[in-house]
Image (cartoon, rainbow, N blue to C red; front, side, top):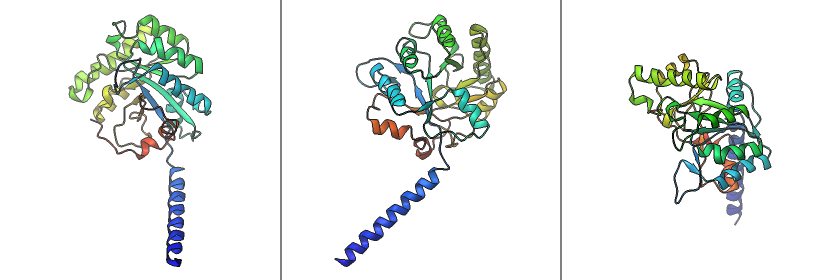
Length: 260
């Protein structure tokens, strides 16, 4: 029996030391969670890029209820460049692909909770059926939301020649700026794919940052041209799961994926 209690004591000490070591290590490796959404609508079954309006409300209300500091992508990028130590409850919200339901369902909910967000738009999809119209984008810009570039035609960049990549990247920024009379500073790689050459082209086109999905080997988001994001889904209904995704360590502890 004495041996048993001694074993329990040793195990307890080892567990405490492991937790303490992790907490100490984690305190120096916090990464601001960047939430990634695509489509906001009710559908039958499950689709990985779709969150229902009711679940989206749950996510946004969770942020408000628990006092999260929701900042813009502009603030995050400036903070990374200036090596700012962000509060541990800081998050950023982004949307890819410019689905019309971002306006019809997502936009009113964001306004209700006063959360800033960035919408990444493939230029040729503007005014297409099922996608954001120019008028809707203008309204969101006037309301203080940010628009970023998502290439011209949403092609997977690593599959293209350097010249074709440059056209997709540069033209989308110039055309979006001209159409909406705003600076387009941020870029999102379609499907998260990029190479070092792609990053160079994005930077040369004048963007101040680029976001991916869960790709690349910069787990700490120190490189503003490969900012990892966290995909939010319809399965994120449990408060503990939402909390875990937003701790600032979720991305850091995931297995690194090739950028292309």
